[in-house]
Image 1: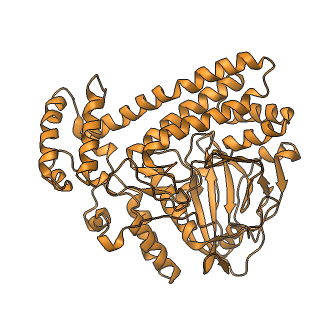
Image 2: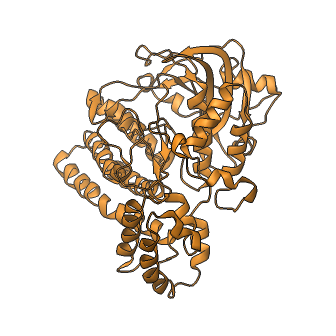
Image 3: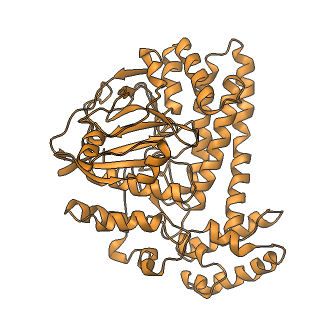
Length: 472
């Protein structure tokens, strides 16, 4: 085998209660769809022949040093606690330390059943694999912490969901797959030794300067606050912010029914399973606080002085809304050309957003066009923009380089829902040109790319995506 992955596995050395040893289930006819050469170079992975890479990234052939396993965790799903979840269709091959010194997991999604599959088939179909590949790589290009896509492979097998669909496997890369739910499962079971071991492991791997469980809680809080503010700044809606989908590394993880808003409205929901809007766009900061509180509850269980731990954890969690608000203002102030927001700037941003919601303005295109005549064209009543812009321009007089800030903070290109759906439909029929085009354009989201201006167009009435699906 010529493909070389420099594995240096640490999670596999944790006790057996943390995971189950599980090899991928081979597939019939793997075919490589995409390989992220730039990411591979960062990870120190030397690619092999295309056919060989298809075998490896489908799970048919294990490279030297791989120690495949499925991770255990639990979690709150839409507010209800599930005592055991775990990797039901994902298998961790191992870890590598990249040229940047960062340790990352390499995981196969859709690699077959595991002990945690709970009746599922352990497989994935092509649509969600391509969606996660495109969206996660777009998020990385936007500078938003995220899992990455290393490869996508067709399996040559069909999977049955509502209908029979082509199967696929995604190779996902993450700083780790430790979730809030990873801590919850041991806390709920009263396995305090495992909980302490996990806490020490998480600190050593992600936050070596953190001082004990409460230091870890503080570090996760800060990372999550930065992450959610960045989501809000690009109109991203995760769709399933369950605690088992909340990474303690502060990365965006588990791209299921995720979406980017077209027309702005704070109550926007796309996920077909979010019937009551728990994870609506505007609710994401509050849910991040709720999830942090669940992590705090789990971490407290290992404290000898629980009363003192509760008091300290309460203070850490209660500080998160203010931190989220400051991070949100920093992001949105930059989007309107303000480097250091001062009193009154929050009201200026909020006023624009209210007018955008009332005027049915496209989120991405409005911010991208600020200061240009076409910005007003995004509103059903352009005078609503004009009256706001008058005060905004007066505020910008005090800024040194507002245009540069807005150029960097306001992408021209996002993975719009209708384009993603069109890409998936084309791929199912064997045409991967839209998939490769999206990846190429979205790799440079803040650059003007005149040849691809059609990808900035909001959906026509018959193209609007009303709901997105997990695809599991």
